[in-house]
Image: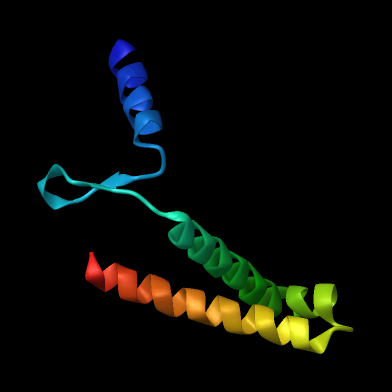
Length: 89
């Protein structure tokens, strides 16, 4: 049981980073956290569109079309950034 606790504590100490090949630790900076949150928001939105035909961005920002467009563009840019980072690391 002590080994499980040690493993859990080790994961907590990593603080969101994960080990890469060679034991190097990869951490997200502020931009990395912002982009992953935007990608998750985009994924949830597409899941809702596909399953319930509900566009959450349109529901929230429907009357402010430029703001909805800005959200879509930011989600798209965040996805591209995460794709670049995936192959960079």
